[in-house]
Length: 85
Image 1 (cartoon, one colour):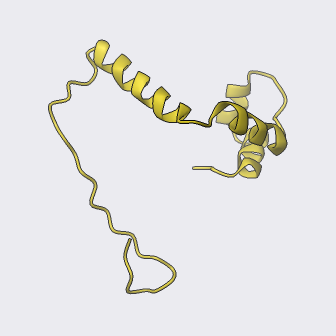
Image 2 (cartoon, rainbow, N blue to C red; image 1 turned 180 degrees about the horizontal axis):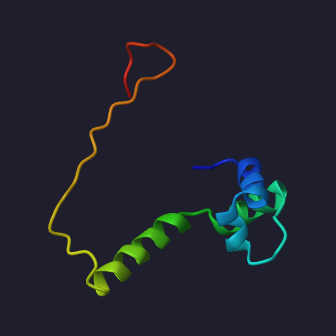
């Protein structure tokens, strides 16, 4: 997973999957990626897209809402080796 704009830029230049997604267009700069995030991915847009995707999968009969899964993962932190988040 890549979250930083600089890492996404590097992946767009080197990773075959990202290059395929670009469809021949040049890799965007990290400034362009940040501007896009600022203008298009704020105010809950990602949550709304996720909700739409779930509704679409349900309409296509791909998911049925029969099961509920709760993730209880505990990850050790770097601050204190005996602390868990």
